[in-house]
Length: 376
Length: 251
Image (cartoon, rainbow over all chains, first blue to last red; front, top):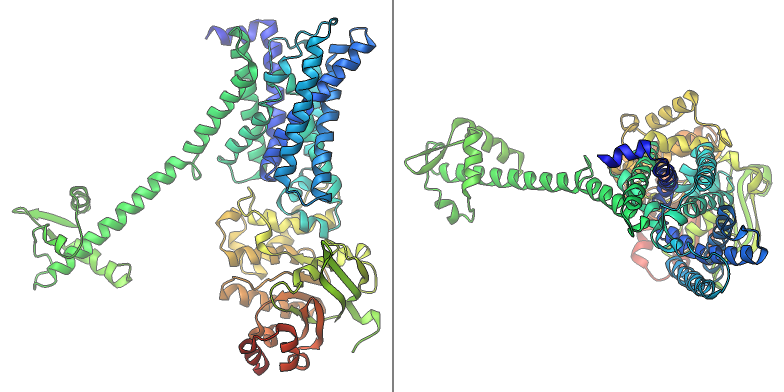
């Protein structure tokens, strides 16, 4: 509770929450398209590929001097360039070789990330410069977020969201049926590049806060959760943005109030909780409801089988409601469990007399209908 | 055979397509007169879908010329409608039937503009033509295979084209859908539109189509169905699978 009050009173915390919320919202919005186009892995490759860009930008800035090394725009530009280059390499590998898409992504991810780690090591060994804080790009740190960071994130995020809304119908068709789009004469390749560029933007503005290792989770998780709740692209994207914002704010606030807790993992845990809830509880698509539906169907089939079984036993007699010992059902290969009989009784289809079960008139009618329908 | 370009909806000359140096289409001369219902028929791996996609500019040929109504495809896009194989998209995509049909209007709408009430009207009319009007607001994952096919057909109808390409429209669909597609074909023909479809079933060829290309990497035969479906042509196209050939020839 005190955390909530802090959120409205503490200036630093407010900055952090605002920044992380914006990161999550933009990631959720763009992540919707990444997930629907089955490009979830691309996000992972982009964020890992951005690391050498950050390190190189730092080195160039340090060489230039004048405090340029840690300027947020400088580092963002480096991350953007490297992330984009990574995607370009993936496309080139796919187009010019027989290497498959997932392998291409794996190659780019590991080579770029490896190069990034090596550069980070070199920076660590530099005698000069205030290199402290660069390691937050690995696992993220929201506590160090400044006003200028939030402004940068906000401006870039708004720009990305504006573009998505402007070409909404184009992105929808691109995601659903790019071949049909190409036949209509749309520049599919350019739209693909535009969408990928926006995904790169969504990722790089979150790197400092969430970290390269887990940023792709913030891209994918809110969209995957949102898909469970709606069958329309608009609501799915809006909900993904909301889920992303919630995860961002929650994770950033919690991690910045608990010392030594990295922001990235905390944000991702929040997003994962939303995914878990959505997977189990969302109406229509939730696994829990599906399981219950399955159980109910199973029960209906069993009830019908036993009802018809008893009816067939009784039809040996002139009176179709003739009661039988329930064990005699075993003889025709039907085992009637107690709860099945209870179901029949509750529906008024069967009644017990002297330890034997017989159908009621309504039960007989129901059994005849089932038999006539040919269901059993 | 027809030779003047203004009576041809589609014409290709010497079209050759290769995947990794292996030719999948070899030297194809193909022509469809305006107003025809043309089937592209051949065994698996004959290059039927590849030919369709090459004509539509989705695959680049290594050689050859392609013309749509006497001009390059890039200048005739508005006059072309397309029904891809229904398996080519993810039917769990979060969208409705009406929304998918409206996608057929995107080419006419151009950049940024959203579909309006006139487009919605067209989409509903198209859905009615394929008996899918009740499904307009259904989520697309709830459709059967045949219904998916009819939605794709409705999407092509709102493209309001003069020439329609369909990739295996009859594959894996129910009788209702098959009937609906054939009805639309006949109606299109009455309106002077041209149809080119990849087809599998030799038995229905005569009933559904009036023009045919027999394809097996090479163009084995081209012309009116009754003239082209000879045992010899079928043997050339299908090789030794004679049971199929006898049946096809009897039609």
